[in-house]
Length: 375
Image (cartoon, rainbow, N blue to C red; front, side, top):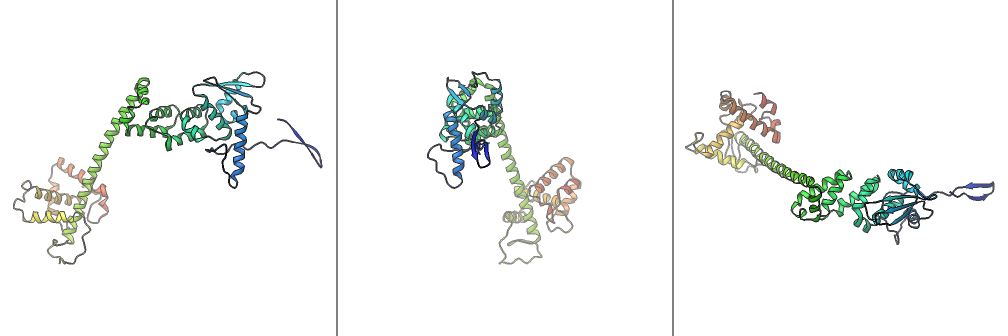
């Protein structure tokens, strides 16, 4: 570094020029004609300074050769501070005089130029990012530049991921240790498998990595099975919720009365408030049918059979059959003691699932899940 001398009243002192500040956070910045407001002027000037240093190659001491024979000039101090991999390459590099020569192959010249420029100013052009995001992702991973790697991942996630490049991005994200991008691309492939399987990327992957194609197809089958299982559980939960509502409505009708039906000692008024139990109307119709049906024996009438099952289910959930107003509650409690073990287990499992579905064990007229297991 050159030493600039400056005369001062106290004498001649060697004063070193103030070095430019380190590059700030990465930005999509325009190199020409960018507007500045307030304190951003200093930041813009600093970025322009670093960009000019790279563009003009002032006192560059490193020559970078690219795959297509291109040459990029850079500064060893900047490269070494920005990337530990480049620092190691520079230590081993040979050159003429004070200039060292390194090579970066495998990607196009423009991608290497944008990559090196980012090491100087942490800036990039949006159009260049859109065109070169995949080679930039590879370079940022290979040369351990996490800031640029995060930017590439974010750009792909937000706007640059398409059906045409999703297979390529999926493979690169596996190689570049980008788990979030792996997950996003994998989901996108599974959601659009018909369209993606017709792209050039899929055809190329099928030829070069048939095992990866097999894994994707197997994961698609697994996802379909999981979706079917999820739907099955949702439907199962819906049934348990309906049974829960039926149990509540049955207790409500037998204890409090509702509309035109209720216990014989209850005075039902015409101006009652609307019932809040959704299953009440259906249970009311079922109770009325049960009261007047001549084939009331279990197995004789399908509606009566359903009523018998609801009464037995209630007895298994009821916390106090002695004071319960639901018909036959105590009778079914006594019947439970004489039931076969196999049938008993089926009823227990059903009762526990109903209790756990909407946690009605806190209601005063229902048992808890623990009590179901113990009786």
